[in-house]
Image 1 (cartoon, rainbow, N blue to C red):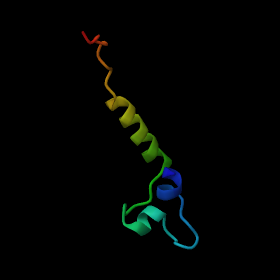
Image 2: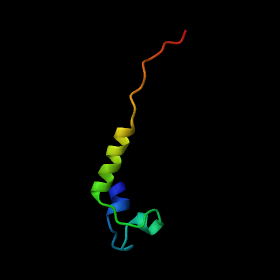
Image 3: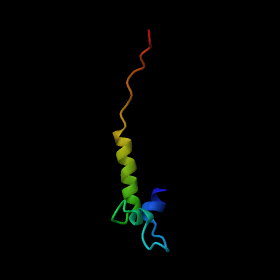
Image 4: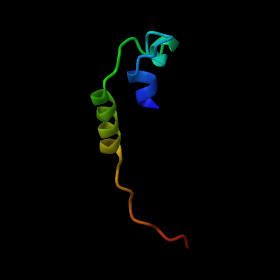
Amino acid sequence: MMYYNFVRIHKTLRVTPAMAAGVTDRLWEIVDIAKLVEDAEAALKARGPYKKHV
């Protein structure tokens, strides 16, 4: 969905759907999407140990 909405220029719109909707003002590249995924994975924290309820 990211590629379709942010990277691919559509023939009828002549821009990406995200640009037509005003979500972004630039044409994204695959590298931009990969960077978002890497940043999201880096932000994940390890969960603490499980504590039993008494």
